[in-house]
Amino acid sequence: MRRTRKLVIVGTLASIALTLLPVGSPRADESSISKPRASGDPPSASAGDPAASKPSTYKRLLDELEAERKHVEELEQEVKALQSSNSQLQQTTTDLQTSDQRLATQTSQFQKQMGDMQKTVNSQLGPFDFGDRINAFLGTHTFTMVGDASVGWYYDHQGGVNDPVLEFQVNPMFRLTDWIQFYGAFGAVVGPGGISPMGPTLANMQIFPLGQDAPLELVAGLYDLPFGDFYENQGPPWVNPLVTAPLMYGAEAIEPPASLGLQARGGIQWGGLGQDFDYTVWMDSGPSFQSSPGVNTLPAPVIGEALNPLTGTNIDTNGRGYGGRFRLYPIPVEAELGRLELEASTYNGKWLDSFWFNSWGLGYAYRVGPFRSRGEWAQTYRQMPSLTGAAAYPGCCGHDNREGWYTMLGYAFWGIPHPYLGDWLEPRFNKFEALVRYSGVNQTGVVANDITNVPIQGFNGSPSIFSPHAREVAFGLDYWLQPSIVWQTEVDLELPRSGGTLYNFKGSATTPTATGIGPTQNDVAVETQITVGF
Amino acid sequence: MMKSLIAKLGLVSFVLLGVAAGANAGSQWGPTPEQQKRHLELFHEGQLLWPIYCNHCHNARNPAEFAPYQWDQIIMHMRTMENLPPKDEAAILEYLKTAR
Image (tube, rainbow over all chains, first blue to last red; front, side, top):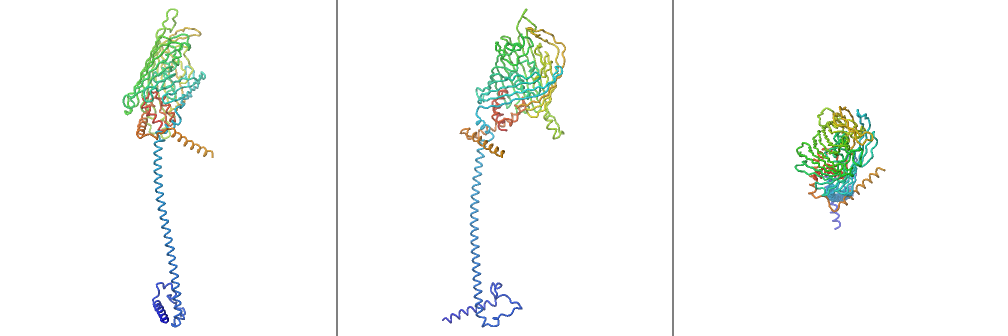
């Protein structure tokens, strides 16, 4: 039995060997038995001896099988290693996909949060409400200071003026709530006459008794007289496009510049946007003149005496004043024809207890594009005391009538076509504005004691202005560095006409002498100044 | 170093200011859509009126020249001086405060 088994094994191995020898294995190129023998190699010992080669062949086959088995095992290990690596890669890919999904989710949430934050910012701290938030933080009591300063040089031929002139003014605003605010003006002028005392020129409370939505405001205290437009709206040097004031609002004004009293005012829109109507009515303690009690610059009332800068300085008397100003704006904004104002004013009352003072005026203002114009006309009537006999003196009695007017035209250079000026010159050219103003005053007489040739801001010092029939043509050239910073240059031609009376309180005389005014002398004045509104 | 410190202090101050301003504003959480619409209408109207009304007397001032609380005061004064209709005053104020 054992013999049979051996034979079977041997037979099997022999058949395998016979099978392998002539054909070669699929890996014959790697097996030593399949290698082609080189022509110079010696023949192997077993090649010529089949009997002797059988055991060695068998052993060689076993070795080769063992080698093959080992090789297969190595390959299997490599496959396992590759499978393991592939598994790890798959796990890594899965992890990355999970992480990517997580990131996508987080990005989406972040974008949503950003959107919510943007909405919050827009709704709470956005441009429409930021100021209100800051204001809420600051409280209802707020304080602001604005004002202006100017420095210039004035020359007048007849008055011998060749002097620097400085002026500054600050305007404190103290707002207590949204319905009441204090407004003041404190300033001084510096010139050849010295430094003026710095006192309040304005001090009033602006009150909205019915709230911000009602067209009613009250102004109580010391305020610019709202007669015409000049004192209120054109007074500050950076607002007035010319250096000097029109004659009717200058050194020989026909209306007092300021008043102590109470105003009620407001505006309503009666048509389209820009079609407005406004009113201002007021009462105060009436006009006063240089001879008024408490002022007494002149010893007795006289025709032609100057008005005091402030009504209400004669509170020792029973003077009183009532005024009204009404303005109409007929052009709607959508018409794009500019803004036109038509104005009428009146100021009436009593001075020195019982003498009537009446005045009224008309005015206009218009601005469209580079062009602007404004003008006014007004007259005043003052009743004088009735003195007879020894009590009468020159200029004591009758009526003291005055009349004044002005018209001004201005044109900004940016309205002039100038295509070839170049990049450097064009913006500078655009900042210029040319102006011309004609103004005049007619009155019965002037008082020699009021005449001065000491210039102050807005007054060139020309004695010609104190003529009963003063006339002035003013040419101006402005260079607007900023909307509220301007370099102004003005040439004034003073062209007074003959006529009228000059009253003069000589020395310590209590009554004036009267002299007729004959031919008058023309005059030229030049002013230049830089003004800053802040 | 100093600049960095100042910048940080400024940033912290600004944040605190914003927080305080927000906290001071009470329980309201921003304007309603109707109020936003009203704001926009006022803004556009003010944008139209600002150059016309202000230039009537003087050159219109740049909105950036003053802080919002200052515009509150200045426009309150200018409304009084120029007798602006209440609605127009509100529009110009809205424009000046927003256009900064």
